[in-house]
Image 1 (tube, rainbow, N blue to C red):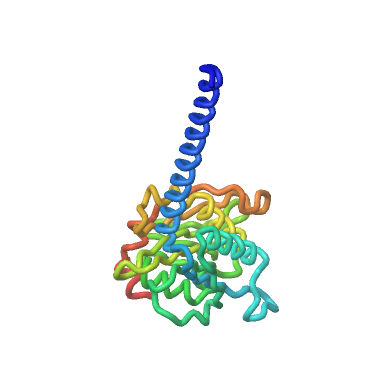
Image 2 (image 1 turned 90 degrees about the horizontal axis):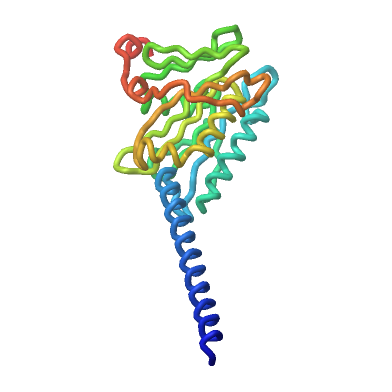
Length: 244
């Protein structure tokens, strides 16, 4: 074998080794990212996840119906669960009679349409009050001294992660003032779960109020963080404790 041929062979071998090492490094980075996401969501490969479904609110709505917007949100949640290699289980809000921590739970909808959400807020975020009604200004998320009201130009959604006792699987809450707000909250979780994990840790509790800008024009696509309300949400106001 001449020197020129040997150099070509050695070059090809070196290129193959370099490409293989690069591919292996990418696989390991991808695997670490997936494992961090699974840890934050509490969704190890092959596990099960509970997705709690709200009921539709409105004239003529059947007790077991779900709005179109909430159906879209549920599909996004199911996709996120399956991306982690876990299996989603859909359960109606008034049929999820089980404790916390054994399975990751993704709970969708405000407390008026979701009894399970009402229980989670009372247990884990006592500083949050969500009201709903037919009149203007009646849909309000109150956290501490701050009120977030839905109107023609904006709607809000509470996005929260609750750590459960004894290091159990977490509970995620998406409580929107409207169906569009529910959808926006889910999409924000899906798009930003890595940043949320970096900010709050894989085992942390947090509560954010997101603002959906001009939902009639932009739907769930224009979303901004209105406030990090974690400290206020975890604190039970003395005045409200007696009224609850």
